[in-house]
Image (cartoon, rainbow, N blue to C red; front, side):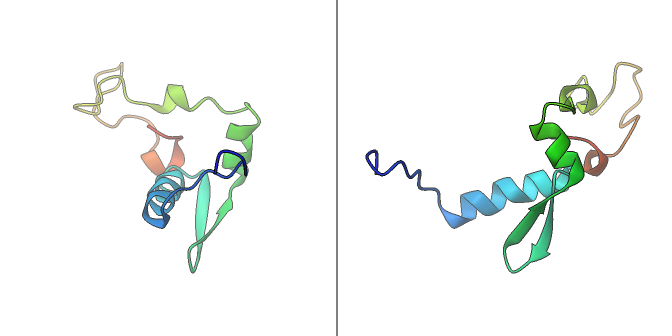
Length: 81
């Protein structure tokens, strides 16, 4: 494996990761296990989108710096949390 340059991941692991990307609008499930990167995902990969600012300040409660739970955009409109 090391000589071939291949990195092996299980199908469930890949599905879990792609599902999380889709939950945050970076990819979309087009069916049959096929995902397509979104414009938002392209912007993230190009370094044009900073998803850190979309993250709640307190992950335990979801409260933002303003103190309102879930204030701002929903998780599907934001990058990975």
